[in-house]
Amino acid sequence: MKLKRYIIFLGFTFTLTWGAHWVLVYLVQSGLFGINQPLSQLLFFLGGSAPTVGAYVTILLTEEVESIEKFNLRLFKFRVS
Figure (spheres, rainbow, N blue to C red):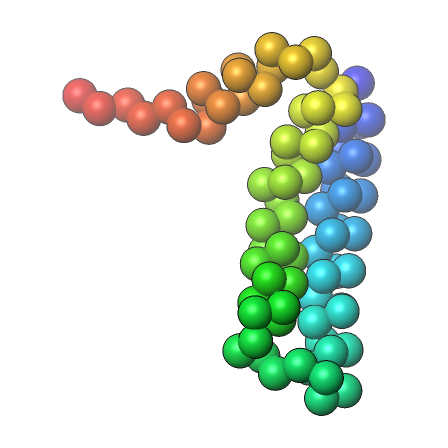
């Protein structure tokens, strides 16, 4: 089960990150878009947030629905003394 999770996470994360950034590079290098335009910023953000999105996609594909709540509790758990 863990190997399946790793494969899904890495496959999704690398595909989304590289895909978004390669499209961004192509659009900027070809002169179709500038780096400061909204589509360029969206592609940059999408590529940068791929690991977070990949974690949620992996959980959705490999676990039951209640594990999303468990993941969110672990992710947003702040220990304050």
